[in-house]
Length: 398
Image: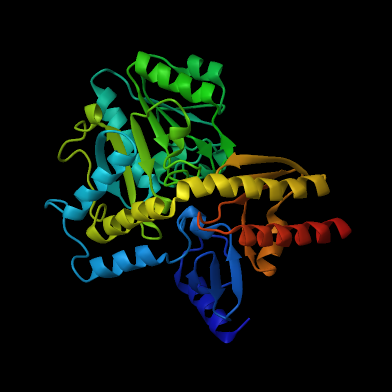
């Protein structure tokens, strides 16, 4: 470890709250699917920024857009009109459904806004309950750890926000039983990322849509991780024959710049009026310009279609691991959001891959998660799988 790396780590230890388990690596620059540390070592990144850098690190179109906007207007209060924000709202609507947007800085904030809208809509009707799924993940605010169906994120933060009901993911009967006259919304991920890369069944989502329509509740789909082309469609719900009432976005939306958004169908677009919800930084010109560039990149490079193609290649590569190693029990996912289910702990494998120059992720203790950029090549995916194979083989020998 270099003196520079040691100095930076010591500075973190002294001045930064220890809310993350950090690996002893300091990254200083990145491009495409690769990232370099302070010692000049190159890594293949197959989990870039938890999916934020969905077009690869520092995509030239996004960098150009941000640089240009930074020289014109960085920030303006939301009490005034902002041309770039209006353009982005139109772009999101054009690519999803006719509606109105609210902009924030993150996925958690987008989900908070969606819950507030749903409760405001249901308030005078006596509706306040939100149905969510077990093993879900919706963010780190107090309301969103309550919505998240994983007790480990809630420990130590009692009392939680009342009114949330959790059901098993993809359990249609449990969904029906949970619905009563006090439910104002159903909040679901199309693919549970942090929960282990579990894909929603058509039957489950369609029943959620049916019940929300029948019982005057709002269907909220959290596309923070799945949105912007990663699953093979611009938005993952487009694989299903339905429309949400509200959709939330973040991560890849800004191509590396912090931005979140929720879009509500037009008939719900005016529920939140002045003084009911707000944000200081959300929808600033810099973030919106980056997001507009992201949509341009998706169209120009055909990244949604490319995700479908790369999924087939990656799935075949992962199948070779499943055949070779008995502890690989399942391969699942959608588009470039793939997972290996292991019968043993996977955390050490991720550490060993880092030592070999590969960045991947382990969730739920035994799920190896791949979320490479949508610009990743077959050569890079093959390289990633070969590194993981080497790590697996070393573990078997030991």
